[in-house]
Image 1: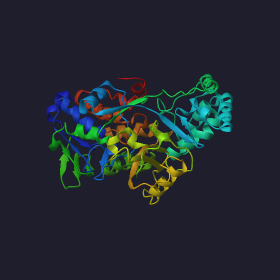
Image 2 (image 1 turned 90 degrees about the vertical axis):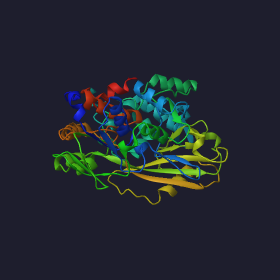
Image 3 (image 1 turned 90 degrees about the horizontal axis):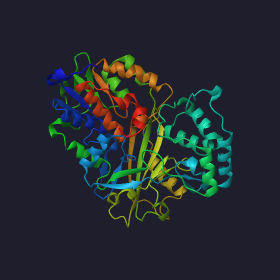
Image 4 (image 1 turned 30 degrees about the vertical axis):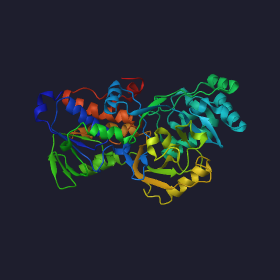
Length: 467
């Protein structure tokens, strides 16, 4: 795209969605001196999937766990500016709950905690593992797991956990998304840890992270929205149709808005349906995603002692339906009325994206799962629950995803629509909060100055280190 700076005075930009990506785009437009824009948000709150709900009873809930860590100096400065002295700083202490024990993450470097039979299988699998067929790169995620970790770690953790979170055949998943998401393995390091009884936990971009002291993760996005004039964000106003040839967007309140460019953050299948282009919509429907049920449980008891050094737990076993459980009150005491008398958990359960969204038993199943894994306070039932069913939880990085996006995103751009964000760009590897903000920032910079969008189009470069 050529620079549009000379036309900027006449450019009208419509932003769809007031999540991290949409708000990032709006903020950056302001910083660049562009003020002819409006953000339209379907809900009466901002933050998208990173919002928080504060209840009158004194509990705060997030829609999953969105910890604040960053690949960008721009985001570091922004987070500090939005909530100066407003964060707790945590060392990530994540664990795998398996065979009634706790295995520190990364699992492969801490298998010494497993029962003897599982430990021996994992070690032997590492020794016996074979590279991908004929020396080529793994063709899919399942091959990548077996080539990198062997049959033992695959059977005991990697395969069951990933099937649980992605709800997709691992042979259908690609490897383009892995980057800094899944740590590789060094057999000698594993053997040393087993022999010497060492824990090996300092890995990954979120080895340390910050979390708002008050208001949950949503406090970040409320603070960011407050930097944008109130008349520039229209809440409870959903996009209902797009006349792409005439560049007119129509909304649920009966209003319309003529635009030069749209920055859209809504899921690609919804966007293409509203655009009305059958070819683009057919492409978008080939993309796979998951539903996620968020269940919050508040127990009238202090957090169990065994969990006070654990920021979250990965749960691969079938004894619980959820793939991750987080002692949420540990991240901030402000999440409960009194941390000495209450503790809360946020649990996440994934289902395949084409399955029915509603799961009436999910709260009961989550309570039973916490008890089965021995995580909830003994002999105590939750006194308060929270539940939200998310139609779009994770964009699944299938083998054919990049091929689909290589046609879909340029097709939309030809209609003056930049589709960005977690489900606008559909790239899991750049769908953290910091990535999402920067997708909006870079979309704004591209429209104004013609600069390249690194985050969406070169994830490996972004995730290689601080930018």
